[in-house]
Image 1 (cartoon, one colour):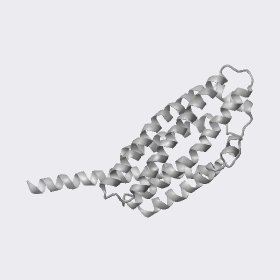
Image 2 (tube, one colour):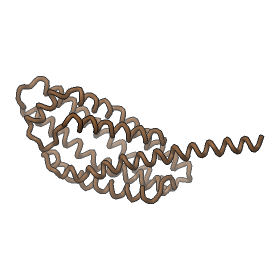
Image 3 (cartoon, one colour):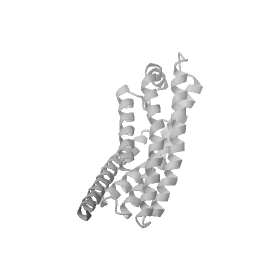
Image 4 (cartoon, helix red, strand yellow):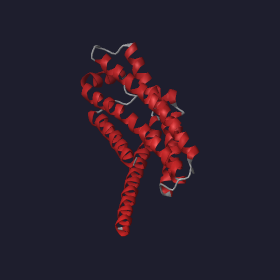
Length: 226
């Protein structure tokens, strides 16, 4: 489970680096710039969408593992882990739609000499899907952080990070329509998105270390018994 969290954080980070490095337009940029970018950077979008296909099973695998681990540790935090799992399933569905619409944008860009109303509509739907994913991610983040902390898997600062970061994501997601129309309110949720990656990495490292320590203790006990 710890390795899954680390892999998810790494995959999402690489995905964002690829998009930023390619100079992807924001949702508020002129539609002609959006068309030009997708016509010239198809490979970057292919990589980003391909990584999204990896992110979804990693996310669900991590949340399922967290729910099971919470149950094995006495069930404290089970309600929060159920919230995280339900919100994570919703998030996966929305991100799948987001990726499909992004495919539609890049495929359409290769056929157009100038932006069409249909192209602009697909781009706005793509933006709306991302905006809708923000509150789902916020609920996932809060649920996972509180479940892990209640089960004594993570220290208090990670609980605070989860509540604060998740709250920012929920607040940004409330402006779904404005974000789909290119509003800069999207940037309200970006610190929460970054906090999610930090939390995943910190939790993953902590779980891997705990697992390694348990194996070392088991080995020591077996040696002493012999």
